Amino acid sequence: MKRLVDEIKKHWKSLTWVILTAITVLSLLPLNALPPAPGTDKIHHFIAYGMLILPVALRRPKNWIIWGLFFIAYSGAIELIQPFVNRYGEWMDLLANSLGLLCGAIIARLINFLVSADTR
Image (cartoon, rainbow, N blue to C red; front, side, top):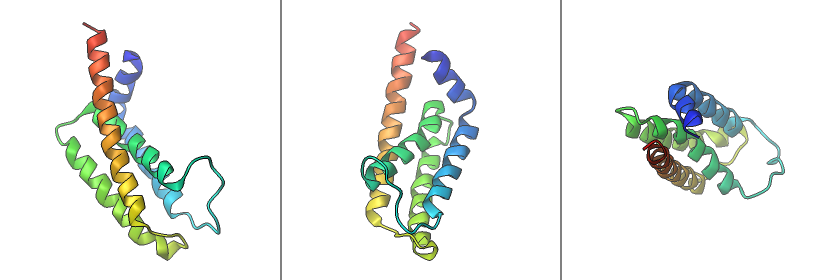
């Protein structure tokens, strides 16, 4: 597990930008109907944004909290743009995104704790 965490920490910026790009495309792609997927829309938002913060929170650069605040603002901007691309902007999506970011940061802290405890 330590090796995987080290690789994520090494490539955290690239991983973060790839995930952010995927979220952006999937959030702004015009659709007639949501594709069938297990779970609810809010769960998908929660998971996507939890994964978005994970590489940043694992690496914990000096300004990592700024990254999290940027992701919240970006998420809000996407919700505002969605009605212009035949999607629905919902404030509950912003809440799910924010909770996903918080949970992802907590999970990253737990992973860092477990990996550091494992190497002692």
